[in-house]
Length: 229
Image 1 (cartoon, helix red, strand yellow):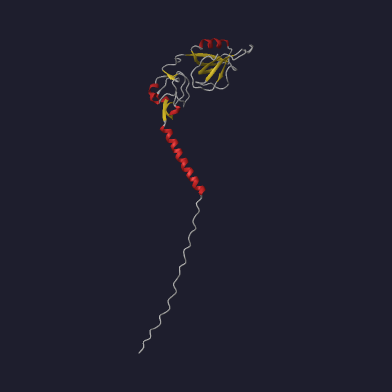
Image 2: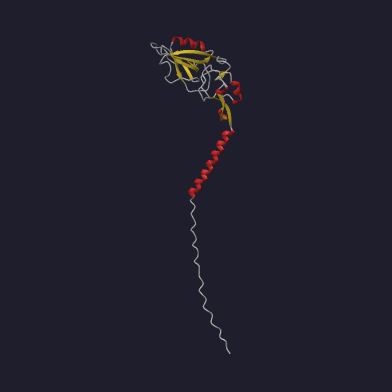
């Protein structure tokens, strides 16, 4: 007896999964990359500059409130201020800030200014080798620009209203402004200047004749001066 094996049912077709499409690679924008590198470099340079500035900084004395010539310096009038070390020459170190208390302002010092050795001292007498000369100047004998303490000026001989201009370079004396006064009843401005002791007698004599003019020069960092003639 033959046993027939029933036929196998047909296999279901296998599902073929479709391949997942690959995302296209993004193109790198070299311009953005280069810009980012530049920004990183600039940031590093900026950080180095700031760090080096503070690393090489030193403290000097600054004025917190305006001082007039002759004022006594109090502890609240001065404070320490950071500046680059290579710019500190001529300014009083903050290490001496306590020594300044009780001293006098030798010139008018605006608020926020840095103090120099010529700005303060135990009294208001001129430094050794210098003399204070007072000038009374009418309009036309000095610039319209306001003069301030420390300005570098020259006092030049003039021929006067009726005089003839002499040939050659006129006599001139270099000086620093100590203070300026208000205009008096005659319309003149009083100006105290600091000159070398050798030049003081000649300048005082010339000032009395009123045949002088004051000219304002660019600052040169020097106190007083000498006769240019």
